Length: 199
Image 1 (cartoon, rainbow, N blue to C red):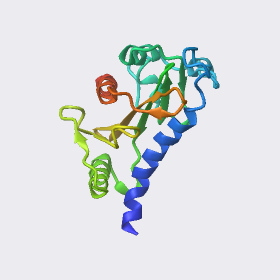
Image 2: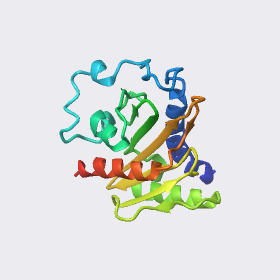
Image 3: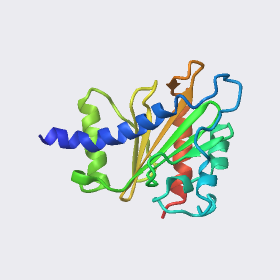
């Protein structure tokens, strides 16, 4: 019974990221060299009242933490669409022609009580499954990559009572998703930018 409780929030976090990523696989255009046809209106058009994305922002609206231009500069590709699939500000998806970045923010940890215990249990469960998280010293209060180097390599960062996750995926020619070779480096750069804006 206790084990199910431990896995639920961690699995929910992973499921949210993976479902968002999998749901986006059909978005790219049939011609890989053509621009991505947005199936949803860009967030800026849907929510004109959002503050300027270059200004300081709160953790309650992921799509305002960094602008699409800033994400594009780090990824080396223009962001053609920004989506808020969770509709509660906890998840933002930035999409370029070839990449999808999911930025997730978690501030409610249910049975884990707080972010420290959440990260501790997430790490313990991951190790118990036979995997070794890759620590990222000097990033937030604690940070590590989890998942395989192929598809599910995600950066988890705790700062105070907030846990951020950064997942970067590449859209392949067959419209499947995989991690780019430099995903860890790009996820870390994005995390550094997000954290620089938080108190």
